[in-house]
Length: 418
View 1 (cartoon, helix red, strand yellow):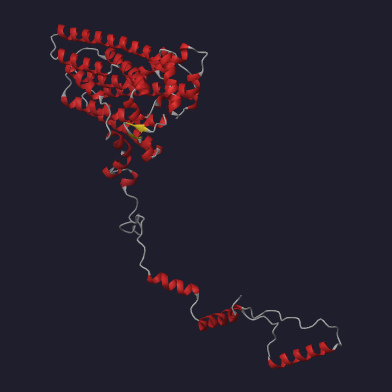
View 2: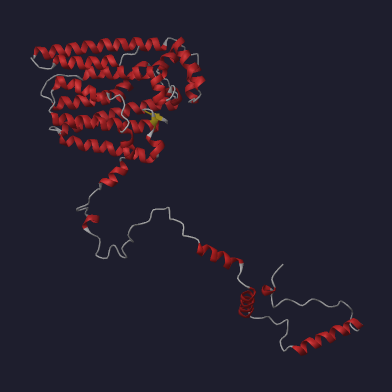
């Protein structure tokens, strides 16, 4: 029901009769109208100004007491103010920041400084992954080869840092491109920082590492080596992604070429930079190429069978990714008419039972036994190259040949799959 205070003053009066002219009731109606007209100088049918209506309504409301809205307003004023949870500027912005004109630091970038606080923001994903170290085999390999190459200490620190930066940055991108969930037993960086920020952080580190090379005694040669191996890394990764996304099973030779570019590139980068800074004239590239192949095939094997890999990366992550790893390629090409493995890769399954079935099928096809045989051949080849390098250093009277040989042999033994 509408309050009397808000009734319209211009309401049309109700009709009093529908009788025909001349009837008795009609006479009473005319008499009533005449009486109403005589008691008021204003006609009811004449509109009342809106300002008069509203003012009279407010007056009536005030006399009736406070409204519901007024009471609610008073109650809210008596409550304590809620704490503001959003960040606010500590100081207000200047009224006219360009009052003195645009400075040289904005136009010519003279005196421009990039703050460490901003750098920390960009490096967030990188620092997160770097804080969860892996097997660290690359730094161990650098240490072992340095027993042969005798790189100056300052140069060795730069090389170790650059290889570590590039390795960690490449893993950030790999995890995005592979849609991985875990890396080294923790959530991948892009699950925490987002894909865009993670990719930008990785690319940023690529260039930070490049800048570090200027500290070496042969910076231009180092930059050429860095550029070449970074190209190789992307070539290998590109082919790996192409095979996965188009469900194209590569040949064994194509796969090993990809591994030589992608995995071997970081090993090769370290040794080539060391050789460029060393006075010792030996070529360790064939040996490090062999170690790179051995490392990746062992990684493929363990990804599908190792409980420790299951904890760190998830059960048979390569199958969920849809990756054509070394045992997978063997299983598919051993019986091209059987499309079981191809279809499982196509599904990018997360079903553990399906993945266990795929592993059992590969075991039945002899794929893991074949991978172990290839690894044994690569290990034998690597040991021969170690002996040849040791002999070459012995003939030239170089010190540290045995120490270096033992260090490399330990790395080879670590890659052995039981």
